[in-house]
Length: 369
Image (cartoon, rainbow, N blue to C red):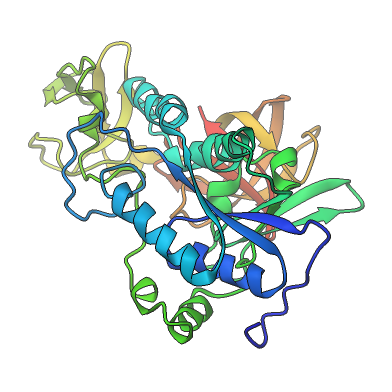
C-alpha cells in the first residue's frame, strides 16, 4: 500500500467501484485494492445514439465519447488487476435524467441534472442493475470528494464536506437517501486533489493526472439539441411594467440572472428576473431585481436530521458555485421549507438545488420552488 494513506479494511469485503476512466475513480479502486478489499469495477453505459452529437472531444457524461471512455476504463481495470463490468443504463438515464432535465426547462426552471443522476442513476439504478445481472458486492465506492459516517446519537448516516473544500462534492450528493449512504464509501474525502494527482503520477497514470475533468452531463455546449422533438416557441420579452421589449427564442434558452444573449437594447443593463412558462414570456429588469432574502424549497431530503420541526440556523448554498450564506430555515410541511437569508442573495433560481449545511455536515437539500 502507498505509504501514509491509512485505509483500514472493514468487514464489508467485496466493494464495487463506480469507474469512469478518470483519475479519481482509478485511484479509488487502486487504494481499496491495496487496502486488502476484494475490488471490482463497474461502469455505466448511458449513451444511446438518439441525438446527433458529434464526438468533438467535449468533456461530458452523455455523448459518443463514452465508447472510448469505456475502453479506457477496461484497460485501467486490467492494469490495477480487478474485474470490470459494464452496466447498461440507457433507458434509466433517459427517463430519469434527460427527460427530467427537459421537463423542468420547459416549465421555466433550471434543474441540476447531476444531483438527480447521483440519486437515481449512479447510486440507484447502477447498483440495482448490477446486482440484478448477478454481480455481487456489499458496498459501493466512488471517487467523489465527500465523507460519510454514522452518528450514534441521532442514529443517522451523515454526509460531510470533503477536507479539500475546493473539490468538495457534497452538494451533488445531497439527495442521497439514508439507505444509499449506509452502503457507500468515499475514500478520497479525506484527501486533496493534489495528493491524488501526485499518486497517479507515481503509479504511471500520467495521462489521467493531466486529463481534463468532465464538466457537464452532456457532450455539447448547446442544450437545445435535447429539445429537437419538442415544441419550443418564441415569445415576448417584457419589462417589469409589462411592456414588450423584444422576442425571445424559447424559454429553454434562458435562466434567472442571465444578462447576455437577450437580443434587446436597453439604456441600462437588464437581467432575466422571471420566466413564465404558462404565458411563454420572459421578464427582465435591473440587477437589483434579482436579489432576494427569501425562498421556498420543496421535495426536501433530510440527512443529518429526520425532519425539521422548528426554525434552524444553517448556511445555505443555492447552486454549486454559490458561497454558502447564513440563513434560517422554517418548516412549512414535512417536505417543504422557507429559507430566510441574513443578506439578499443573487439570482435565486427555481429548479436549482439548495443545500443546507451545519458546519461541514449536510443537514438536507431541496428544490427551489
